[in-house]
Image 1 (cartoon, one colour):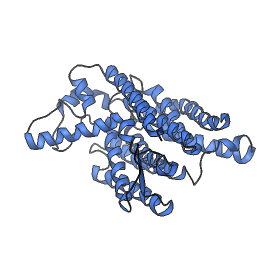
Image 2 (tube, rainbow, N blue to C red):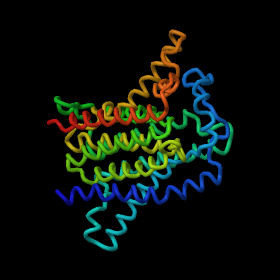
Image 3 (cartoon, rainbow, N blue to C red):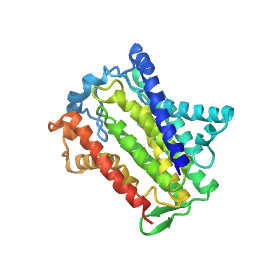
Image 4 (cartoon, one colour):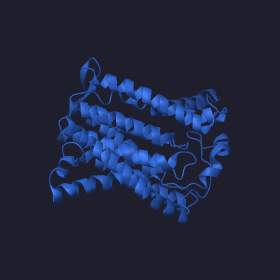
Length: 352
């Protein structure tokens, strides 16, 4: 039991230390090359119009704070995984016991993390080098859907998984629709990635979510998956160290795309593969992401159908800013909500 816990804790701590070490180097590079948006502000989703309230709150920071801070997260994960694997190969025991990269549990979430990171990085590079922005939303959604489709196919065809665990009810068979469901969940999580809009908000939320899934996987004795999720959380805490107000950099697309697609694969991996519940509790564990997506949809529908806005700004965390909440208060209250929701979701997932 102690060794199993160490297999999760060691990479968690290692990713944090490595992240703390590489963050100043990445920060120096990003500021040296002025890796921020050349034009502040954004266009409202669904109507193509400007967002004056958002721009008033954030426009200045957008053109002075670097993007691509997500490099700290995924680079720390990859470096940690590689170092532990190499130490196991060349030094043997006890280091080989801590290697968590394997075909059974972690190849797919690592693959999703890598692809999301690289595509998001391409978007960020385009964003900071040209005034017209990065990759179009359509192309980004296609990439995310493709990752979800491939992952869903792998689970269905290679691993024989076609069910989703439901608390108190057991496994729900989906048949080939499992692949479609996988794509929908992945896209929904990616949509929640727009929560990266206030200093410290997204980093803290994602760190808590991945910690909860590390606990679920550990309880299911999926120790490699637990180590992967804990490693991502450790890297996120390192990122958060530098993202606490005033943020040195933002997660941006290379961070949010990598994290959301990896989270989707992690949640499904902690489901039927672990003979438990991982996806059904995802809307609870990732409650802030759920609320972000829902409030955005409500705002769009209200504007289209009723010609009026429900919130001053959507998603709702910006609404709280607009009505006078300081940014740090929004962030800390979201952290508290995520912890409470995460503990509740964890309890549901572990009920037999």
